[in-house]
Picture 1: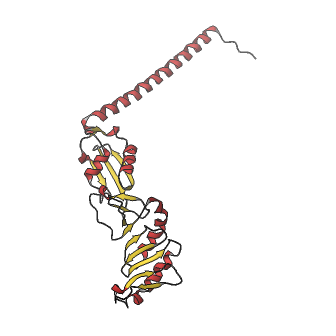
Picture 2 (picture 1 turned 180 degrees about the vertical axis):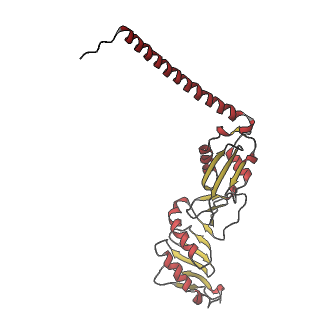
Picture 3 (picture 1 turned 90 degrees about the vertical axis):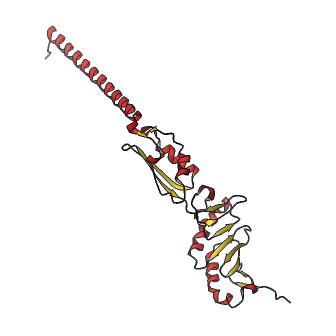
Length: 256
């Protein structure tokens, strides 16, 4: 069955369709104007003094035990007053990680009161590792740290001679065993890869090249305490542990 619509009905439907289309366009225009108004409002708010970081005092820093606040401010390189919404935390985080001896850096903006919070995790120096003309240290992972970057610094009791970046892999294995040892080890000499030398409470110790026997060698050295102490320190040249099967106490030749 075919339904025939009158001309007046068709005209009414067209008018209704046009009215709906006009309403949708008007609604779309209102959405655009509302979004533009909100954006303009945010820009205006960001530029008003109430929403600006006005000085370094508005930056809260946590986790900085050795780094000075002035040093951190220099790395941030912010010019005050600065709209808080114009600050890019990810850019500041990348800058801090690149230019400071830190493991992690987190920067957060706070709208009211306008401020920044910075949380740092500094690298922990576990051994002094000076380079020619440069005071330095290394952390447990073997990352070298320029000590000039630390305003407050207490030198570790342990010192490493001859450390280079290519020895980081061995250091990651070597250091935890040294840290767990009951022996007092003051110096680790890595200058000769074929013969690691320790300066310990018991004297100078030669271990040969670093190997999987390192832990066993430290245990052998600890068991030799009583034997070594039977001799005056002036008579002991060094302790030879290059053969893990046959530790030897090398004595100095008697003075005639």
